[in-house]
Image (cartoon, rainbow, N blue to C red):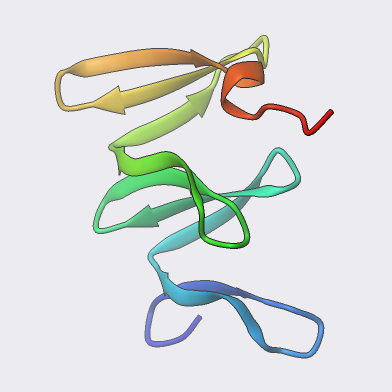
Length: 88
């Protein structure tokens, strides 16, 4: 926490992701669900967007196969395996 913002540090206390987010949570063990200016998205540790920071809420469905992405107009679904493609 730096000035009310959150980032990610490595084992040497160096910022890997700058402290510019209102909230950060690990997601799928390799990604970060972030909140900035009231909106959510998902990024990599290299700050590459996986899901743009434009949703009012992001939820994983109970079966853990879909993401529910909330917007002002409602919500949409995305299959988890399509959003987070394996490197195989």
